[in-house]
Length: 86
Image 1 (cartoon, rainbow, N blue to C red):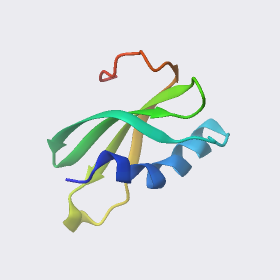
Image 2 (cartoon, rainbow, N blue to C red):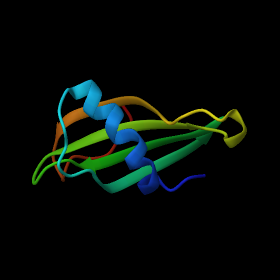
Image 3 (cartoon, one colour):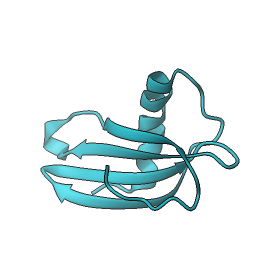
Image 4 (tube, one colour):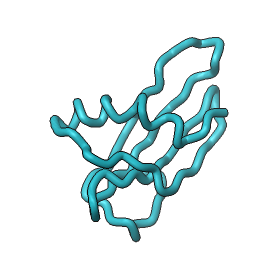
C-alpha cells in the first residue's frame, strides 16, 4: 500500500483540472485508507491558508499498472471538518 502523502503530486493536477484553478498549497493533513482490489484513500488536503478539500483516490494493484484516479472530492472544507466517506 502506498503512503497517502506520496499520492498528492499525482492527484493535484487532476483536481486543478476539474476545479479550473491552481492550488498554491497542497498538503495532506489527515487520511484514511481502505484495502480493496487496490486501495481507496480519503485525504484531507490543505489548499490555502484556511481552505481545505476532501479527496477520494483509488490506487489499483501494482500489476494493473494504472494511474491513480481522483474518484471524488469536496471543496470548501475547513481544518475542523470531520473526514468521512462521501
